[in-house]
Image (cartoon, rainbow, N blue to C red):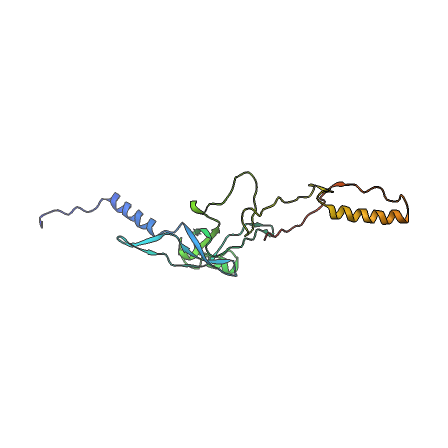
Length: 212
C-alpha cells in the first residue's frame, strides 16, 4: 500500500467540487410560510425545505425576520391583502445587502459585501401547493375577500345600465305611487301614471373598494 502513487484530482474535478460548494451555499429563491405579520410591512418566514449541514445530516433554515413583502402598487394606488399566518410566499434573496435601502430608501453603497444572504429576502405572497390550489375557472377577473368563493359579485362600472323593476323593487314603486296620488289629489292630472319599470345608467363610482 505504501508504494502506491496518489494521483491528485484533475482540474475538472476540482472545479465541479467548487461549483457544487458554491451552489449549496447560495440562496436564490425559496418557498416560505408566513409565521408572523408585522406592522411595518414585513413578515417572519419559515423556509419550507431543509438544508444539508454535513453528510446525510440536515437541519431547518433559521427563521427569516423583518422580511419585506411585495405589495402590488403604482402611482399612489395599491392593492391591500389581509396577509395572515399560514400563507405561503416566494422568497427572493437579493444580490446585495438591502439594509441601507430598506432603512433610508436612498441609493447608497451596500453596508457590507454579503451576497444572496438570508437576511436580504423579499417575500411575494400568494403561492399554493397542488393540494391548496385556488378555485378558478380562468374565464373572468375574480377578486375575493376573506369570505372565500361563493360570496363574489359582479362589480358595477360607470356607464353600466340600471333598471328599476316593479316586480323586485315593489317598495320603491309603491312609494312613488303614493307620492303621485298625493300630488294628483292637490292638482289633478299634475303627475302622470307611475311606470312599472325605469332604466338608466351609472354616472360615477367609488375610487376605492373594500371587500369583506
